[in-house]
Length: 431
Image (cartoon, rainbow, N blue to C red; front, side, top):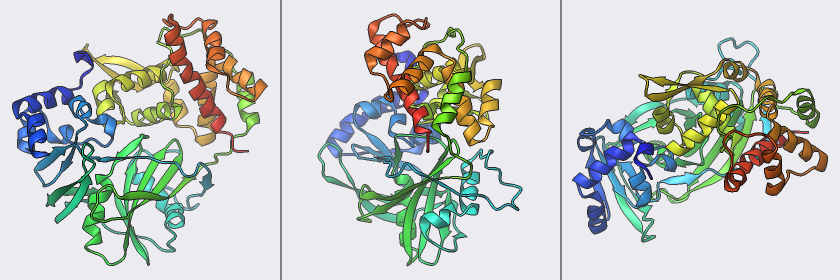
């Protein structure tokens, strides 16, 4: 991978690996302990050792199947272990809930942080429904010490357990709710991702399992685009880091989510196509992540590096998804200090992201359907009842005067964006 698309973390870790001969040490000892002071020689540890998703790992970690975990307040262990868990979807239906009518300080159309998402989840009753507890009391939250505990984690090369000891590491709990029967520990996110770092659930679970006699329930809350997705996990063997299984998953919304086939057809009928912009045709198959990126940029502008570090993207994906949002007119790109690209929501993006759920989805469908390749594919889908195959979509693309799409291989790759986005539109239908 070329130097220009390496992040600051990539470059700093390559220097550290060379300086301390980390790969050889791992080969001989099975693991390598690195201190925050050693990391800080090149960059802040909070930026160098916090990777919430597998894709955020530095290139040298990914290339050598390595991961990193904290073991004390100032030390980390690097080895070939399985640190991440893919998200699974057990349920696609959406349960409608509502905020109490007398609440004035919570707005379903404005949920700018994980903390407010948690407050909405509690106030609307979705947490009580999901956890099956009649009364919930918010209890512990924030940063705290882990105490001392040992665990085993799978070595991905040998497929054998590796022992790890944790001594007074720092943990953080976004929220905890105690009911009559259980204590639920919540990790909340506003970014969509393919996986998550198990440590975010496991370390708090180990700490509080030793402090209370009630059942401790690790719960993940993901809020994006008006939908609250709750996942409950269970560690089948408390001493084994990767023994978690997903036992429950539900989706909730505080807003009206009912979108019909007629709604989409009416949008398509009234939408006029526009000339193609001088921006690369999108290569970003998951439209949900285009929306989620815009949500994260709704509060503040971010540089390309910040998007890559704070979201579940590598640099290449950051380029693809920011270009996709720019193609639709949702984002603007400018340069800080004349060099570093910075992204912010456009006026159109701000208007759409501040609409309620149903209006926002239909407005997003409209800006997609302004582009001929998408509209013709959608209309053909409506006519046949099926999303067209790749050769048919490529044929539509070739007639649509796309910017800098020339080779057949590029047409084929980017046709998956069209099928992905049309799939997203069809998936909105609830009737």
